Each structure stands twice: as structure tokens, then as C-alpha cells.
Amino acid sequence: MRATAAAAFSLLTCSCLRSTSPTRLPSSSLRLPLRRGPLAAMATAASFRPEAARSPPAVQPPALPLSKFKVALCQLSVTADKARNIARAREAIEAAAAGGAKLVLLPEIWNGPYSNDSFPEYAEDIEAGGDAAPSFSMMSEVARSLQITLVGGSISERSGNKLYNTCCVFGSDGELKGKHRKIHLFDIDIPGKITFKESKTLTAGQDLTVVDTDVGRIGIGICYDIRFQELAMLYAARGAHLLCYPGAFNMTTGPLHWELLQRARAADNQLFVATCAPARDTSAGYIAWGHSTLVGPFGEVIATAEHEETTIMAEIDYSLIDQRRQFLPLQYQRRGDLYQLVDVQRSGSDE
Image 1 (cartoon, rainbow, N blue to C red):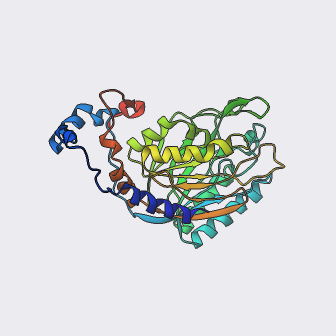
Image 2: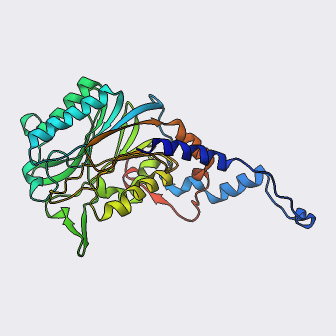
Image 3: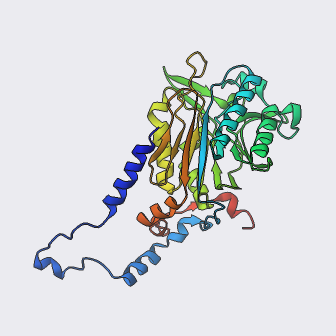
């Protein structure tokens, strides 16, 4: 874990941002307009039209039910034994809640092996529930009994004749608050390293997922979704406080991109990013990188795991979002006169 380093980083950035002693300038330079008054700055900002950089305009985040809480990232070992995986996940969730976590995250595809052969075998009919969806039923029941918010990683979902990589979000009442079907399928080919095509068995989701919970407004993505900054930007424009990405990066892309992408999504949008991965199993057909992580709104790593099975506990303090946005007021500096991000679904709704 790097909580100490993150605290040091926070102190460092704050001190670096304080104004220093002014540099003395030659008298001739004093004739130049070194800075503009507030009215001129406001006029420039208005001409840049920052509000037009998002269409429809960005919404303000909702009022927070609580501003500070503990989050748990349960980095689980995954086997071919589905019943064992479900029992192990429940144990980890219960231990996290006993440690004070109000929000718990599980990894991507935590109830069975990550493979195209396994997706159909381990798939669950979430709509049917009960015996047709034992992983789903366990998550709902444990969220209710422990009164926590649960971002349930992802499982293979069967709906009709289609399969999806699906993340279910449960409220503290055990009710399903949101369901995200992975919208960017993991189809890659790095010669000599890794080739995987989720599209052989899975269908891409069609909807963005923002969920209002007891721990704030959360935007959901799954693994490969994190590579697409547009998704995170849309979630931020929809007022998210936190982005959660269950993911299983591999031994090729993990060392290069996993932390980099998390920090980029957090820094670009000035909000929290939490990820949860499976533990590494070197005997598996697909070897996960691990390294579940919590990143703060300045792109600072607050806490992270290595590759073994573990649960990372850390604190989310939403007051840091406003602080960081005051340090770097990006929302007032965007150039709506030059570019625009369009939320197609919001544009087509009655909002």
C-alpha cells in the first residue's frame, strides 16, 4: 500500500501550489500588462464558453449522503470451482464490512475463469435470479444483511441467446441499483504476447451506467472500458463523484497501462477512481496482473495491492474533489468555442 506516499504527495502538491516571492522585473517591463483584472478574466472565460464544451451542459454532482468513508477492494483468487468462488467472495465482503467498509468492490469475472470457453458455462440469468443466478443472489443478500453498497465486480450474464460481461451494483437494502454491461469488448492482438477476443462469445452493452448510492454518485466501467477517456468524461459530466472499474489486465498490458490509465482518468476528471482485479494465478490460462488500486482526484495513488489475494482498505474523502478543482479550475477553462463532448444518450432523453 502507498497511503503514506499519497499523504506526502498531497502535502507536497499543496505546498508547491502556494505562491512564492515575486520576481523583481526591470522597470521597462512594468509598462507591460502583466495581468488582467477580474472583469477582463471573466470576459475571456465567457468568450471561451466553457459550459458549451459539454453537450448537454455538465450537471452538478448531487448532495453527498456522506463525505468520508472506507472503501474495500477485494482482490480475490479465482478458481474453476464456482461454489468455492462465491463462498470466498462472501467471506471477503463480510470481513471488509467488519473492518468498517461502506463500499466494497469485487473483481472482473470473479466467479469463474476468464476465458471464452468459461463464459457460457458460468453465465447467470440475472433476471430470473434464484438458483439461476447464485452469484447475483449472494451479492444481493450480503449487501442487504451488512447494509453496504456493493459494486459486484462482473460476472458472465445470460440474457436470451446473448452473453454479457456485467457489473451489478447493489444498495444497502440489497436492491439492484444499476447494471453495467461492458460496452468496449476486449479484442486485442499483440503478436507474441497476447491475443484475446471477447467478441467471440460476448455482446457489447449499449448503455452508460451512473448509479446514485449511499456513498455518492458512481460511474461504472469494466476493464477495457477504462481505455476510453470519453466514457469517464461523460460520467464526470453526469455528476459522478467516483468511477469504479472492475478489471483484469494481463501480464503484458498491466505493467504498462493499468496504473497509468487509472491515474489519467482520475486526474483528467478530478474525481476518485477505484479498481478491483483478481489475484494472479500463474497456472491459469489468462494470468491477471492484480494491483487493485484507489486513486484520488489529483491522480495520486492512495492505496494499491500487489498481485496476491488480499483486501485493500482505504478512505475516500470527497472534500478533496472540491479542493483539487479549486487548485486547477478546469471546468471554467475548457474551450467550448473550439471543441465539444456530446452525450448522445442524454441529448436524446427528456433531461
